[in-house]
Image (cartoon, rainbow, N blue to C red; front, side, top):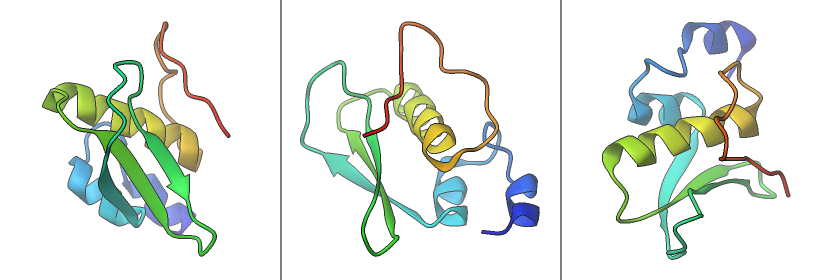
Length: 90
C-alpha cells in the first residue's frame, strides 16, 4: 500500500475487514488460550502477513486488540497502547 493510500485509511474508523484487506493481512484463529495473549501480527518470509487472534473474546476486545497490533506492527499513526497493555516486537 502506498503512503497516499495509507493516509486515506483511518485506523479507528475503518471496519476491520476493510482494514485487513487494505494492508493485505490474513486473520487466523490462534490456539493460544492464555488470557494475557491478545494476538500477534506475523510477517512471513515471503512478505505475507497474518494476524493471529485468540478465539472466545468479545467482539470489542478482539477488534481493539487487532487495531493496536496493526498500528504497532505496521508503523501506523495511532494513540498509544493503554497501560497495563503492552505490545512487544520479537
